Amino acid sequence: MILGLIPAHEAQLALNVFLAALFGGLIGIEREIDKRPAGLRTHMLVCVGAALFAMIGTSYFANSDDVSRVWQNILTGVGFLGAGAVFKDVGTVRGLTTAAGIWVVAAIGLAIAAQLYFLATIAEVIVLITLYLLRRFESRVSPLPPDDGTRE
Image (cartoon, rainbow, N blue to C red; front, side):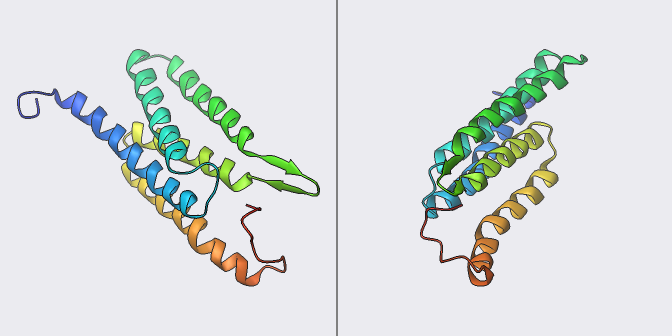
C-alpha cells in the first residue's frame, strides 16, 4: 500500500500511464512545434492507449498465450492510425514521418507497460534526436528545396 490508500500494484500501473503520457507528449510537442497534423494530443493518446491495452491484456490474460495476441492487435490498430496519416499528392507522399512517429510512440507505450523503462527512455531520446536534430541536418545537406512545411 502506498500511503495506506493505493495498493502498490495499482500505483505501478498509474506510474506507467503517467510515463506513457509524458513520453508520448514529449514527442508530440516536437511534432506540434513543427506544425504537423498529428501533434501533442495524438502522440499522448497513442502512447497511453498502447500502454493501457498492454497492461489490461497482460493482467486479464496472465499466464496465457493470449497476451501476445493483445499486443499484436495493438500494433495492428496503430498501423491503421499511421496509414491515416499518410497522404499521396501529385508526385509526393507526405506523412511518413508522422506515421512512423505514431508507430514508435505505441512501441514506447508497450515498453513502459512491460516496465522496460530504460529501453523506453533510450527509444525516446533516439526519436527526439531523429525528429529534431536530424531534420535540421537534412535541411542543410539535402539537394531538395527548403522544407516549407508541406513535406515530412
